[in-house]
Amino acid sequence: MTTTSPLMQQALAARDHAYAPYSQFKVGAAIRAASGRVYQGVNVENAAYPEGTCAEAGAIAAMILGGDTVIAEVAVVADATVPVSPCGGCRQKLAEFGAADVPVTMANLVGASRTMTLAELLPGAFEKSHMGESTMGEH
Ligand code: THU
Image (cartoon, rainbow, N blue to C red; front, side, top):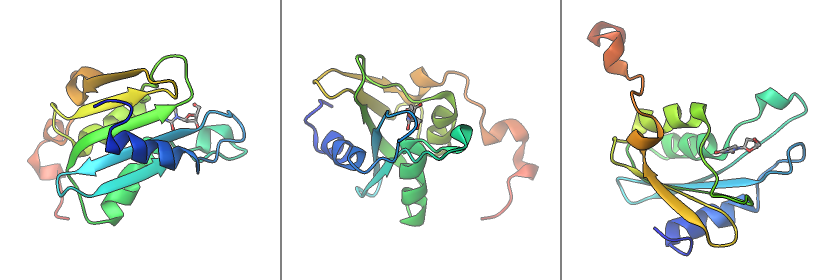
């Protein structure tokens, strides 16, 4: 994926709506689900700084609300000197819905981008299988 790909354009468009008055670091994310549908997300901060949510988390929430549960591709963009990298918590959140080979493209506003798979971003991810089958309820 390049910075001009349709999915990255969706992440860029989302970024305009980010609410980041405390960090001034606006982030946009876009997830393409296995169905082909695209879900956008932005970071949303508040005065209690640690309580903010990341763009990736917003996109995941939109995806679940939209009825999709399988991530096929992810794009994340911010105004950074190097392509923005998902935080640890978001790597875990993305790994819940994406296979190891799902590409995550990170970009900045001046055309730099880097693509890594979910497994590269989160090697040795904690998975539901680690808890055994009995702990996974019906849903
Ligand atoms: N942030 C994201 O939304 N996604 C990332 O991948 C990295 C960080 C947000 C969280 C916070 O609102 C701001 O960027 C600064 O950390």
